[in-house]
Amino acid sequence: MQNEAYIRLGFFFGVLAVMALWELAAPRRRLTMSKSVRWMSNLSLTFLNTFLVRAAIGLMGIKLAFLAADHNWGILSAFDMPFPLAGIISIIALDFIIYIQHVLFHMLPLLWRLHKMHHVDLDIDVTTGARFHPVEILISIGIKMATIVALGAPPWAVVTFEVLLNATAMFNHANAFLPVGLDRILRLFVVTPDMHRVHHSVIIRETNSNYGFNLPWWDRLFGTYIPQPSRGHLDMKIGLANYRDPKKNTLPWMLIIPFLGKER
Image (cartoon, rainbow, N blue to C red; front, side):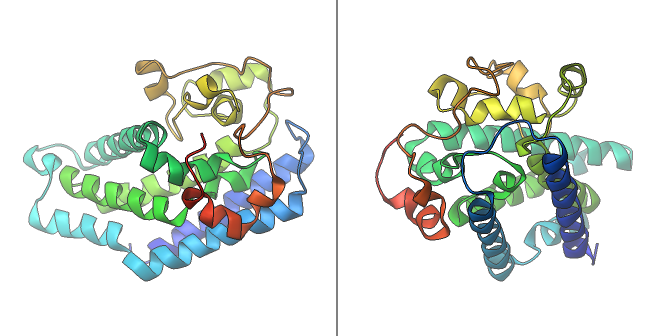
C-alpha cells in the first residue's frame, strides 16, 4: 500500500472527470449560480483540505491499519475468519460509522456549525461532494482512525473504503440524470444522486434525512429515509433558508461560516 496516495488521487480525478462529463451531457437540474465561481470555490477548498490533512497526519489511517495488523489489535483479530470477510466487515462497519457521524453533525449544534458550510451551497453537483470544512475533515479522520484501530481493519480494506467513500460522495452529489427505473434499482445498493439530493433541501425535515454516502441501508433501517423531495427534484430549493447570499459560496466566506452565528 505504498502507493495509497496515488491510488486515491487517481480515482478522485477519474471519478470527478466522469461525473463532470455526465453533468454536461445529461444535467438533472438547472443551476442557479455561476458554475465557474462555485467550482473555483469548492475545488479550492478540496485542495486546501488535502494539503492540510497530508501536512497534519500524512497517511496515518493506513499506517494505523498496518500497526493494528502487526499487533493483532481490534475486534476482528479475536476471530479466525477468511481474509476477504474481515475486509468486507470492515468496509461495512466504517460506512455505518460515517452514517452515525453524519447524523451527529446534524444533531449536535457545535458540530452542525461546521457541517452547515456543506449545505450552504445553493446548487448541488459533483464538487459539492468534496465541500467540507477543514475542521470537520480533521474530526472525521479522527473518528475513522479510532474505528480502524477498534476493528483491526485490514489495510487493503481501509484504502478500498476511502476510495469508495470519495467516489460515491461525488456520484451521489452529481447533477446527473438517471432514469427513474434505474435509480430505483441502484438505490437498493448505493446512494444515488436523486436519493441524496433530498438531503440538501431547504426543508428541515428533508435536510435531516438520507444521511448515507455510500450504502443506502442505514437510512431505511433507522427511519431517516425519504424517497423523494416534497416539491420534486426540479422545483426543490437547495441550501439553507438563512444562507441565500451567493457571496457566502466563495472560499473566504466558506471558511468563516461556522464562526458567524447560530443560524440554522
